Image 1: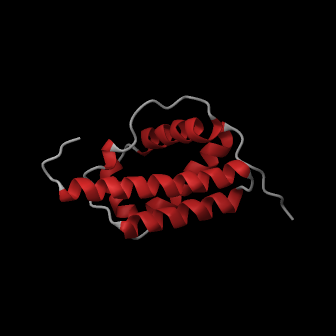
Image 2: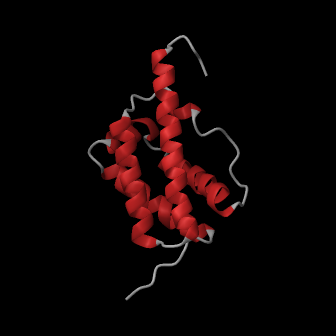
Length: 130
């Protein structure tokens, strides 16, 4: 039996991000949204996601930016975020176990709730510009 290890280095982040976005790209609900927006820039997007999660989970500060604005005007609903979270959690559980893996799931939950809340706020107030 293979014992899963915790997320502890950039190679783990890359495995998580690559596996997660591979599933996202093929998903019937999320794939079309991501592929339409990112198009041929997947390599750059993945690099940005490596830096983001490296900063968040490993406390190695390599990401500088604001993650929400690119998502602000996307036509996303609770169903999109619930699906994103299901894939996120299952990807983590497939490869990892431990404190940081659990933190990754917790942070994904918090991020999805915050993004959905902000998107709904901006949809209901169309004159507010980021």
